[in-house]
Structure formats: structure tokens, C-alpha cells
Length: 249
Image (tube, rainbow, N blue to C red; front, top):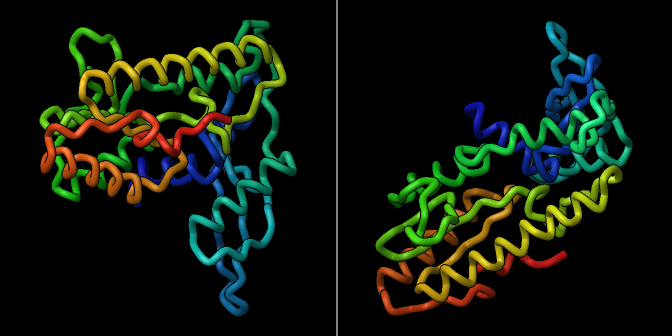
């Protein structure tokens, strides 16, 4: 498994990149990962969470997990890590409006393209024989860029981060500067809804995929939408039908 795929797997299992942040000394932050180890004799699975601090690896025991799949075990372990507060909490060192180094790290890491979930989705789309444009405007006159664009079938795909777009399952409300962040996330969701409406009114199908979704399953949804519009170019899909997984909290 390559690095991008491993990162995407950990992000999905943790419910978002921001849940993996670890506070280090001097205001630094790192990203933690869950490691699964199978006991040779009993075949029981133990989970550990670890991160790197300069030249050393820090490891903490999480507990045993018993899901039937690797993804299930990772998610089970991450829920325990978050619930028990096993990751050191970053502290505020600058007094900036981005209240902690963790928040600032999330903002710095909020890449406009080529995120782990995007790369994972594109890999599956490519393997299914689909060709597309990346980080492009579906409508030249609308200053909104989709993560994956199929120009001919007029299908626009957005891969939304759980933190920035208010995922109903994984978004955690900030305890510091709560009003600021609530307004910020609300603005993002309003902008998403407006984008969807503008594109659909122009004959586009809009698919919104959460970063925690299985990229293989998401690729099938995208392929179905592309094939449908190739077979019936006049078809127009409503926003609600194409964004069923992007529900309000």
C-alpha cells in the first residue's frame, strides 16, 4: 500500500485528518496512525496508536479490536483513541484566532487539490477506465472548482473534508472560538449548496463524496452517473438525488 493510500485509510478511519493531530513540545504537531498487530497463537488483534517526534517513535496501546474487516478494526481503534483522549492535546502558543496549533495545522494542510481521499478516488476511477479533468471549473463563468470533472457527460465530483464541510457523522465542534468556526462551517455548507444548484441548473450532475467514504464504492457511484449521462445526455439530475450522502447534521 503506497503512502497516499495509507494516509487516506487513516484519515477515513479517524473521521478526518484533524482527528489524527498530536500536540508536541514547542507548539509542534504530528499526525498519529493506528497500527494493528495479530497475536500469533490466539489470532487476537491488538491496536496501537503511534506518531513520530523528531527521531523517535511514540507508541501507546489502545486495546483489542474484533471487527471482521481491517477497516472496521481501524475505525474501532480510532473511536477508542478519541474517546479516551490518548493523543496529547495541542496547546495555544500564539494567541492567534486559529486557537491552537492543531487548528493552524489543519488549515495549513487544507490543500486545494491532490488530498489523500482525492488521490484514492482518482486511482479507482482510472482503474475503471474513466478519464477526467482534475481541479477544474465545470462552468467557466462560475469561480467554483470541482475535484474531478467529466466534461462530456457533465458530471462534477467534489470530495469534501469532514471538518471543513460539516460532516454529520465526524465533524467535531470546536470548543475554542466556537462561534467563529460554526459560522465558517455554515458558510462553507451554504456555498456548497449554492454551487450544487448553479451547476444542476446548467445541466450538470453533482456528486459530493465525504473524505471518510470508501473510495472504491464512491468510484462506482461516479461511474454509474457518467455512464447514465453518456447513454441519456438530456438527463438532468436533481441536487438532492446526487448528494444523498451529504445530508445536513
